[in-house]
Image 1: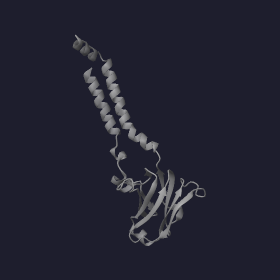
Image 2: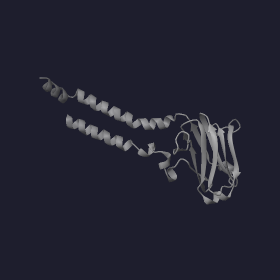
Image 3: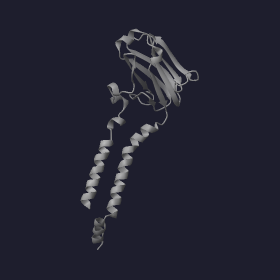
Image 4: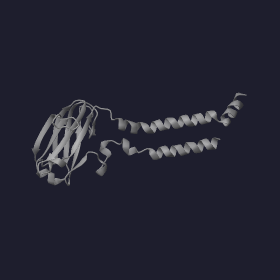
Length: 195
């Protein structure tokens, strides 16, 4: 019986290890290349978006989930050198961008050239959804990249992903405990110990 419980536990641990992806819990700073959710293309050109709240966390950078309300620095890195010579701007609107006529403009950074390759803006964000639109003057505006920011909101999908592994581990431990309690071997061992 003990051998069966050991095999079952080993099988379950292997299954849990196979389902667990440490990259899911990685911070934005450790993600690179095509996996980076903050990387966007303007036509064939590449930009990278980051948001900072140094009053709360000095070094943390965010992309789509901003943890707290307040002053936020928005930075767009113009990765492609060709974008540095043409006017690029950014607009921040309260809302999810589905109805631009009803969304409130929070900040509008007019298109200018950025020889250093960095477009900067500072905005005060309250709780809710915001749409950040980056547009190059020479690019087709219908294909402009957008970022949907969630400020001080719970991302239930991410919460479920991070809670799945601990929940499975608790269920496995409970199952093994139940099997051990119900096993004849444990009852016999307990009876011997009591006498």
